[in-house]
Amino acid sequence: MNDFLSRRDLFRVSGLIAVGLTSPRWLSSIAKADLIRQATGGKRLKDTVLVVCQLSGGNDGLNTVIPYARAEYRQLRPTLGIPEEQVLKLDDNLGLHPGLSGFAELFKQGKVAIVQGVGYPRPDRSHFSSMDIWQSGGRDTPRYGWLGRHADGELKSGKFNPVYAIGLSTDRPRALHAKDASIPCFASLTDIQSMIGDPDVERMLRQIQGPPAKEGSPERVVQQANIAAFDAMSELNKRLSQFTPAEQYGNDAFGNGFRQIAQLLATSPATRIVYFSAGGFDTHARQADAHQRLLSTFSAGVSAFQREIEKIGIADNVVVLVFSEFGRRSYENASGGTDHGAAGPMFLIGKRVKGGFHGPIPDLNDLQNGDLKFSIDFRQVYAATLDQWLGGDSKTVLGEAFTPLGVYGA
Image (tube, rainbow, N blue to C red):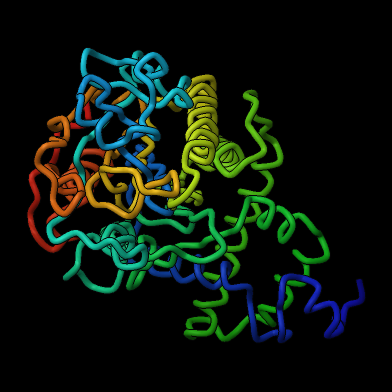
């Protein structure tokens, strides 16, 4: 590569468009965060990790956590209901979809908390609106996301760092939008490796910072922050290449997602939040096969992830929070599927959760316009996660106090 870069070279390396003027978005993003963190002083970070797994499209909770002993379930779903002999029974009333065998084993080991009937007042069946409510933390919260607001609090307290939170997505989910804390998102870890792993690219990224600005000037401070952020990502890239997962993961959204998260957590001790999503849960028609495939790949992926983090010795500090924007209707439709609903289950997975069922079994005789009524506000789970797991301040983040649900152990 020549010392002077051509326009073609710039476009080749991930869309850089101006020598000396522009840095990649991830670099400027984490540099801003590091700049503010350094200005506020640093403290030792809390060592717990939250992995958020979003089931996009509206997962069918009734065919995931199945009230197999209730006659009403069979009446509402004469063809789509899971036959009792196929249900993975967890107690005398409830069981899991047959695709969740690995997940069922984690439950039996006390590593899964199933929170039933989760939702919010005045439910919205729109994908966009409901997901917006879940990711922001409510209808009346600021435009930033619940994890973004938490990150802002960590930044102000001096506990934030350039890789405190990372999103594995092409676009930053609203949950990670923050006012001050900049949270980088990547489509995959390969993006980091391809960007930083090329020595020509690394040299170019350092060159575009330009000659050192005047000592003490704002430009010099930004330059230093950019370089520090790049150094952090360069170090992460080196560590990523040194870790090979021991578990086998499927070549699907969940397998690839959990494999990369295991790789990230094994090599980035400063990372405390990872967010990723998998779609396909909008099962209006021919649900049976699609839901079987989705739940099977989820179960295999999260089970392999749990085994992985136990092997590398970090399982005591990692919890996976699983949610979907809404459940499905209580009854099947004419197309062999289910339409948008309201309440549904949440899952928390890890060695430090209080395993078992939380919340009452959904009452199939007391529906709201054909939907399950919610009995637990999702912000009760968020409050517990913020206060008891991440060490944050749920009242500040959520805008009001919610009683934390008792889903975390000692």
